[in-house]
Image (cartoon, rainbow, N blue to C red):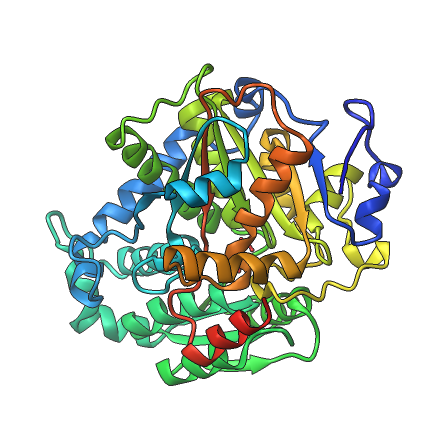
Length: 429
Ligand SMILES: Cc1ncc(COP(=O)(O)O)c(C=O)c1O
């Protein structure tokens, strides 16, 4: 286990630490982190954008409540749960502070954080189409989107996406519920059960022998210039990013309800599993808008696919792929099996990220089992990575301001895992 020791601000390929190249776990403190105010002032996005996304979510509450059991008030949000004393002790060791779990593994509708972006972008597209068709009148309840002229309109349009699985599922569930044609392009590592569930929803699944990046590129090419279709671009979508960012308002509300202060004396460490970067990046952006420098985002990546770490270390001028370093991008954390990070995300939130921790697959299976047997949490391997990271982070690179720190581990997926998949993952611990 290693912690980087390059001078602040050093970048270029030579700044990618040797342990990363060797696929060894490491804690990378971001030497390019800057103060929140200056980063936000230069950002293309603002608090108004995040609040606009939140307002759109709320417009759709009546629709989501009508369509999906488990969202009585229409909110796609998860509980914030305290880690029990045993779990907290295991994670913190001798360090002070408290540990909470943001339970997106149990998010209504899809059981995965990617719904916050994927569902949101489908809703945004539906609203745009409805507006252009003259279907929106003042005072309309958006529950109407599920019926009549709205459905007829959506049935004449397609939504497409490239995905390792969970974004495709989120887009598929929402798109099909509104009557869209849905086409999901999937990488070789997408799990068979995820493809199967999409087909059951009536989505068209296109399988690619290549990785996630190739699946996204193929879908983008297929749907370029199609006026009757919308491509949800996991690598480059502003709507996805803002849909995720609105999650920060949910967490803010829950922290306040639990009486947890977040300020200079009470930092908030948030452990976020990272694939292409959209979900953790959007959440990071939203939390920074709300809490400024008091939030310390810690991204978590598999040792085989540390795409955000290498992008941030090498600099933001050109895209860098983990394949260039000789890494193979093969990991049991299928949602995190991404070779090249989103440049949109890296450029927007790179200077806000406190650290990136890389973890081996064995740690994911270990934590998957500990969390199931000790806390009854049903996670997929990607989603257990935050726990694997927290312990390493505190052991290897303990920050100096932990006395009144709150740690939030974001569990990003798993409740919908079929039993056989879950049993198989447990057996690998
Ligand atoms: C369970 C899970 N966690 C985390 C992520 C990471 O999200 P992103 O790819 O937007 O970084 C994914 C992506 O699919 C996922 O499926």
